[in-house]
Amino acid sequence: MIKLLRKEQANALVEFALVLPFLFVFLLGTFDLGHSFVTYITLANGAREGARWLSTHPSTSNPVEDARVYAWTAAEATNLDISQITVTPDRTTYDPGDEVTVAVDYPYPLLFGAIGPLTINMHVEATMTVLY
Image (cartoon, rainbow, N blue to C red; front, top):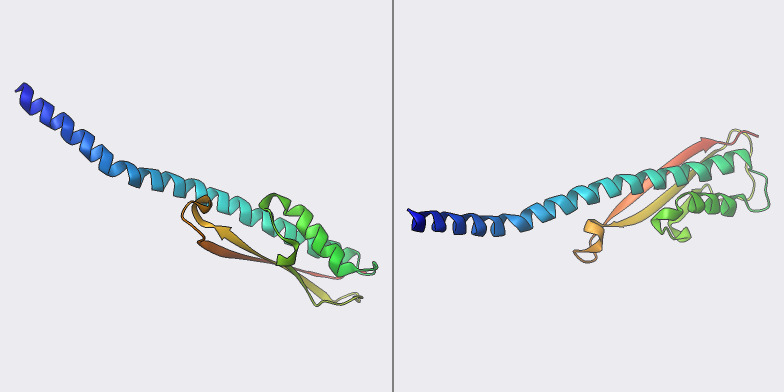
């Protein structure tokens, strides 16, 4: 009877060793999914801030660059490169009623970069109308 019990204990240990990597990947994937949502929301807030700045300050000396800086500052927590932010239409002056779009493209690394250079491209846009 004791020998049979020992064999079952060893079985449980082997089964646990086989299942543990899957549980670890599932747990890491769950954390990564939550982190990707936070990153997406941060990028959306940055794009919206850039579009809002451009729609309310269309006559500054360089409104496109100002909008890009505002979007970059709002999405600063994501290590976003300012070259990943585009503003359309790219002009020096805007008239009331013009629509402006600030788009952000960000390569999100899967599983916190643990599985190599695999990324998902996150694309966020915010469009607003120039007020005055």
